[in-house]
Length: 139
Image (cartoon, rainbow, N blue to C red; front, side):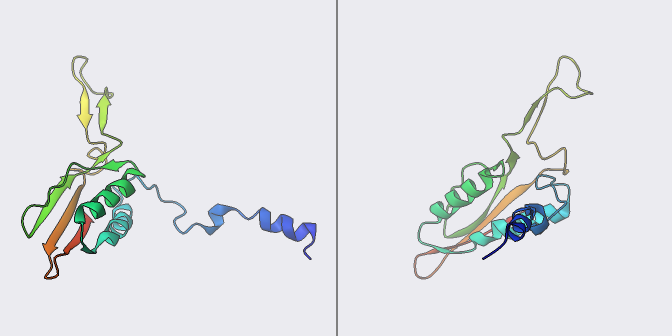
C-alpha cells in the first residue's frame, strides 16, 4: 500500500514534464520544424482506399482540429495531383497598423508568417484492384 506522500508525489508530476515538444508553437508556420511535424501527421493518409473521398474527409476533419482548412477536392481521372491552399481559422480580415483607413487586410491567416502561405498537395493513383492510392503533404 502506498503512503500519502508517495501518492502526492505522483499527483504533482506535471504533464509538461512528459511533453516531447516543450517549446514549440504549433501554429508558427514560419518555423520549418512545425511544418515538418505537420507533414508527418498529414502523411499518415498514405495508403490504398476503396473510397478515397472518405480518406480526404478524414484528413479535412483532422486538420480542422488545429484550425486548418482547404477547398473541395475532386479526383478526376485515374491518377493525378491536387494542390489546395490552406487557410488558418478561415483567414484574416480587418485593419492592421499600416492599413489605410479606407482599406482592409484580407489573407489566409498563414501568408503573414510564411511567404506564399501553405498548400496541401494530394496525389492519387488508381490501383489494379480498383482501389485508389493516396499520398498527402504540405508545401
